[in-house]
Image (cartoon, rainbow, N blue to C red):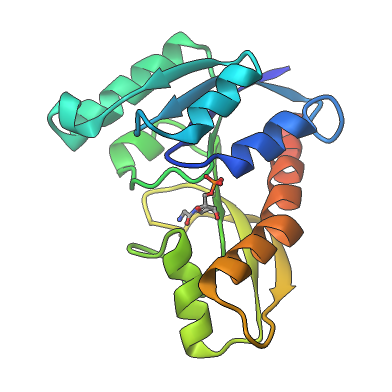
Length: 195
Ligand code: GAR
């Protein structure tokens, strides 16, 4: 069993999908730690409800990006973590961090990369931009994380239709339901199994 840490910032529906997949889709790894950079993230409650250890690391308390990443690395290394999943983790990690875990960090992004990705494209912003551009198909991508924001090797993608009258919120929900929550557990299982 690989030891998985999930890094979160907000509601944690992707974390919930991973928790729910344990024992069915996700059998080669176990979530042993959830780390948030936001003390109020509902994702922390989801982890506690599932009996998973949690930690909060605040960038402003660390004082610098470097100290923030060092603290994260300490927690992950102390926990013997094999695989790190960014599930709605709304902060960029630099090469100092990513180069420490080559092909061991996964991220879920709510578009078909290379569309609507990179710095500044996160959460609802991605779907607002997809609607502004008038694309008829969008989706989600799970990829390895390297020093380029949303630029690491793609592991899995799933397309989702944009429909007339979609708002960013409606489209976000459809992309989550039809793509992210299915794709992420499958991709994490694949990486754990092949590691
Ligand atoms: C998800 O849609 C995830 O793909 C996105 O934020 C949302 C988090 O929701 N991540 C990014 O935009 C990263 N660039 P959740 O907290 O309910 O899982």
